[in-house]
Length: 93
Image 1 (cartoon, rainbow, N blue to C red):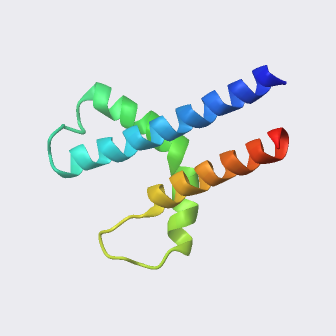
Image 2: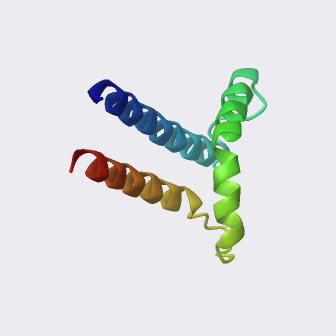
Image 3: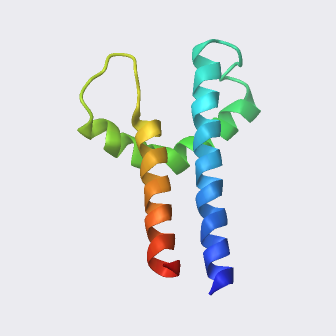
């Protein structure tokens, strides 16, 4: 049982880290620090987008329009942390 919990925790951490990488990549592109037309950058951004955009777009559709401010990654991070804590509390507690 501990191996399954450890694997689940590792997968959640991996999702969180890739979400943070996706947010940082989008900032770097928005501020023109990296070129999105480079093949490696485009490949990384495409992979991260395919992983995270389905969930982020659902959250964006529910949120009110805040102009240029996108808080959907923050909501996803909070929700994932909450669900992880709830799951481990139910399993271990």
